[in-house]
Amino acid sequence: MITDYWPLAGLRVTTPRLELRVPTQDELGEVADLAARGVHLPAERPFLTPWGELPPAERARHVLQMHWRRMGRWTAQRWALDLVAFHQGQPVGVQDMRAEEFAVRREITSGSWIGLEHQGRGLGTEMRAAMLHLAFAELDAVSATSLSFTDNHSSLAVSRKLGYRPDGISRDVLDGRVVETQRLRLSRDHWQGPPVPVTVTGLTPTCRTLFGATTTPPQ
Image (tube, rainbow, N blue to C red; front, top):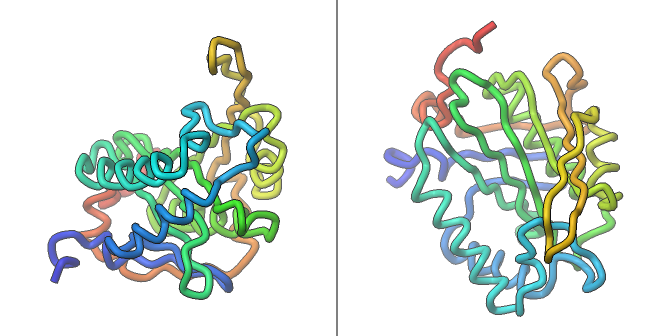
């Protein structure tokens, strides 16, 4: 079975409304279709890499290639996990979690997107809460970081709701103009646990090895 060699395929993170997991290839095609239908309004620019503004077919291919690239380049020293969020069996978005030298640093960075048709229902909060539970409760992370443009009020609201604290401002360039990015950090000490029940299955010892999470976090 594929999980004998790639145990990430058997990892499941579930909440009352969602199941987050690595998609099959057919399901990944459905995720690409979801992206093609739109991930933000035309007037919005939530991503520093403006892939959400690509034409639908290119936007769909971007999602496919990003997923394949991350899976193909995975090592315990540097990894990026794309978990597709399924609601009632249908994909609604992607929650990612990334780390470098996790065995030592025990820090993750996350990002996410939700199909335009599924926004405004609190799914983004539930997705990130599930990811934080995986990071803190299951993988022994000590901190989680996130980045949002200072005018991305919905993303910043999710971060505040889950306990993130400001961690400085970055000044980046988008289309030849400066944009400000709010850095946010949530420490293990300030994490209050998920606001909804979260269950993790499939995090086998072999799977933990892929994350570099087989040792006690350094003090």
